[in-house]
Image 1 (tube, rainbow, N blue to C red):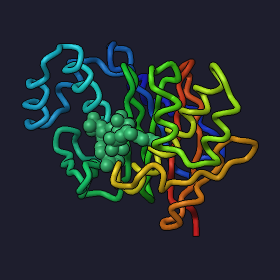
Image 2: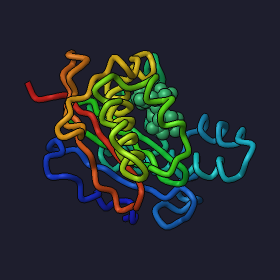
Image 3: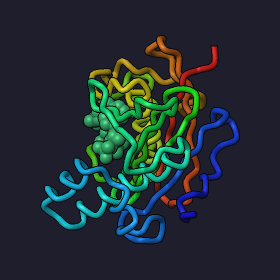
Length: 228
Ligand SMILES: CC(C)(COP(=O)(O)OP(=O)(O)OC[C@H]1O[C@@H](n2cnc3c(N)ncnc32)[C@H](O)[C@@H]1OP(=O)(O)O)[C@@H](O)C(=O)NCCC(=O)NCCS
């Protein structure tokens, strides 16, 4: 039993059966490095050796170990024997079992969303990440989204910017389309300026949920297929 076994107390409206797990990639507190290393496949061991910086190598090892550990617990397949493949745009999946998952990482934090029944996308960001908020808004957000941001300043602006950003990234990651789904082609449904759903693309229809993580200054959003 690892500390990272604890499911995050997610919003109650999160789709039934979805679990969210959290891992600190820089310490042994959630998954010890040596344990994570013992779970990796030969190709992941080879990939780990290619990292130039030790910190990035350790983050990769813990991140993959964390993923394999949870997939193994869910599927019963020994962690090292889980076969992972990547979709056309790089979304990893497990072909042998009906288990859906998606990962996101930012700095030392990784989150894993596991869904037994349908695809899922997840994205996290720290709101103090240095970005050109106004420039990126013009490139990625549509007129109504930009109008909301232009009425905000300081922390409120950054928090809302990353709420929009993670909502769009989660939608890109849901289907695995990634950046081939242009950010402006994803239109957010807004209520009092807050994202509450997706207007576009219409197919497949998707639901967004923000997840409260016990990490100050972090925004986390999931996108799941809407129940028909
Ligand atoms: C995958 C993508 C969508 C997000 O990447 P990101 O936000 O930089 O990184 P995250 O940590 O959230 O996600 C990376 C993980 O998602 C998974 N992933 C990779 N490609 C994916 C895809 N096409 N779909 C879903 N998941 C994917 C992988 O597990 C990856 O981690 P790994 O390489 O350690 O296995 C990427 O296509 C991207 O480049 N985004 C560009 C950022 C941008 O401009 N966004 C505009 C937002 S409005």
